[in-house]
Image (cartoon, rainbow, N blue to C red; front, side, top):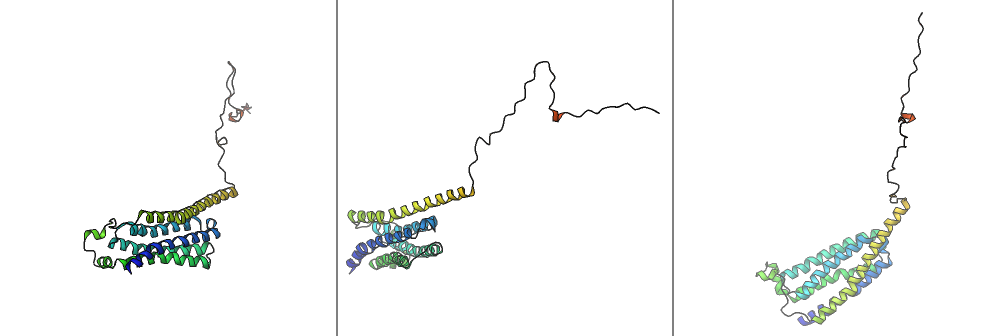
Length: 235
């Protein structure tokens, strides 16, 4: 029974993550995410990938102990809370169809499923976690005593790269490019253009040359008027 659970976890739950991830990316693309919720929602997707990816890496490469189990449980709860934030943001900015919501349900339950199966396979470590751990090594990341095959780890890494990293990196690139184009379009509509450097150059005033021997007179508008003095006749 234990071997059956382990095989289902490794060859069932893990690959199941790839299919809804690609389907969710397709839903985002069809709803024009780059011109609606944009970079903000795409960044939330990246955060959820980190929340799901860290415990997966720990479970596949490290010895399962109270630290790894706590990491899996905490990451699953954080992933669920972030998923709620994601849907709340998306529903106000773009259309979230029932199909996309159903896809989300798969993505939300898979981290909990993986944590539940790992807990069942390592119940002795669960008891240690509730007791605070009996040894110092219970709260350290240690390599597995029987590591998984390099072929399996390579296949999982390839699946993550092709079905998760590449599609969502493309989504983020689209969102960033669309935001930059929208800002440039807004600047053009507002008529705001960078000033001409030549127009800002100060004018150079040159004084006229005066021939030698002639008095230098001030300009007409700067000369003080002279009062005409008239003689007064006495009586």
